[in-house]
Length: 198
Image 1 (tube, rainbow, N blue to C red):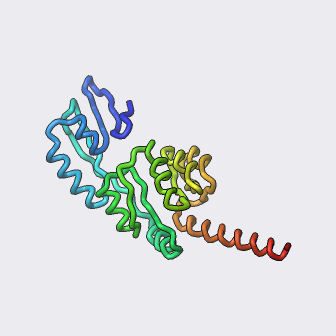
Image 2: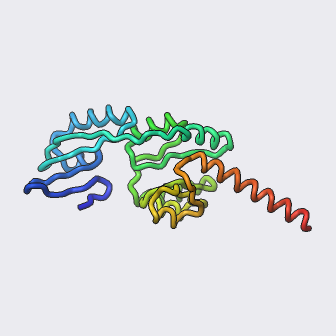
Image 3: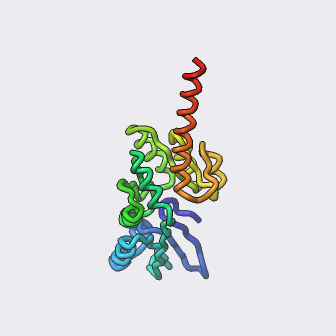
């Protein structure tokens, strides 16, 4: 069964098995000091630690890491040059998120966000200006709908694609830059045509 915001729980050979994030061990495990130190060390490297418990006792940690796509750093740099503020919105812990953001060139990070809180984060960001949200997962769909412009990665979940205003055909952030440039050219063309029509 799912433990929202923590992980998953099940029974194997009459033993309670739980797997999930750092919040999970704080809530369910006993004697977590060493596990937290190990988890923090992995997070600093940009890896997300997943903890495994058997009958409330820690039995292992697996570190997973998203690899930064080759063109992501270039895309972020181009967005920054266009005076577009980039914000990383993630469920990853703060240390992991900040390590990845540093590699990508993203200045602002909102981390430790539960799936249901992504739309709240978008609403807060909208107070500072127009918001475009780029996402690909089921958890991103409500935030994509709330953003001024929702942009889904074409290889993402169907519900994210349905919720978005724009769907990118490839899984490349460079296409976000291309979409913004294309939309600006279209608007300029519309204004020019209206001018000549009048």
